[in-house]
Amino acid sequence: MASGPTLLMRLVASAYSIAQKAGAIVRRVIAEGDLGIVEKTCATDLQTRADRLAQLSICSSLARKFPKLTIIGEEDLPCEDVDQELIEDGQWEEILRQPCPSQYSAVREEDLVVWVDPLDGTKEYTEGLLDNVTVLIGIAYEGKAIAGVINQPYYNYQNNEKQKLREHRLEVKAGPDAVLGRTIWGVLGLGAFGFQLKEVPAGKHIITTTRSHSNKLVTDCVAAMSPDHVLRVGGAGNKIIQLIEGKASAYVFASPGCKKWDTCAPEVILHAVGGKLTDIHGNALQYNREVKHMNSAGVLATLRNHDYYASRVPESVKNALVP
View 1: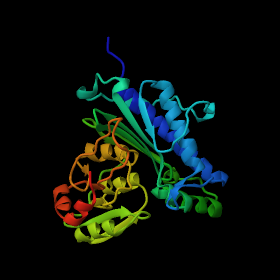
View 2: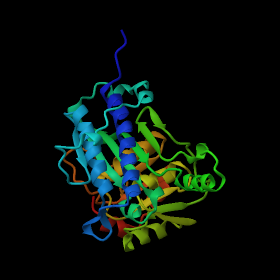
View 3: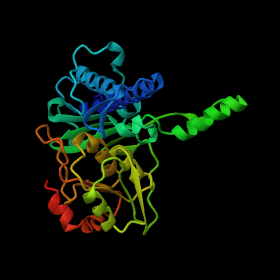
């Protein structure tokens, strides 16, 4: 008799459905018109009602189904007495049908750490730059990011808005390009799914970097890459998606502002298709439960040619960013 899906695949299947629920919450909050914005540490470090509700939904839903997990979320919120309407107990069937990589077939709940960013790109969300926003659920084992889910609540946002205009003017039915939102997922050793992999044309150096958290270290490091073009956008998840969809060749963030919940899920997606994410020194990031939350030595991520970009990081930048 064949055994059922492994713990890891059940967890990823749940995280997929939970991320979709969180994405719907993110859309609902903005539709209702009350973002409930508060400043956490400064004017560029914001929290909204969507951040709070999405995290409660994600963490509570995961904890009910997998009570021995370690779950670390960006927002400092209690998870008890959560409204039932925030709970998602579904699992994405397509993932349950996938084989679990053999190295993860015997992992236990208590061995896993889940890193949650309920709304990556909050500042952009408050400014209406909705295609920058992602929901991130990353799963780590023995300190390594091994599985991840990224929901883009507003994927196809521009097409969706154009479709609404066409419907209003022409009274036509919405076409397939009007579907709003998508979910990307991946497991190391299995692959990454939910998108079409593309690469920047050979020889082109397009850098994606922060829009809201720049400083001299960031600009010096980006300039040292001699880029043909620089994209300044919000959200770590969004920047990794630019790499895997051929819009950028390197994500450069020479600053300690990025956290483990920003990078865990995106790192898995990137690594599953042959890319690489490290700190500015080229060190792998660690995701065990005791690790400090800050990626204090910055982030350097590429789909290809990681050594080329790593070799161009100025020594002055490396000396300023201590792992």
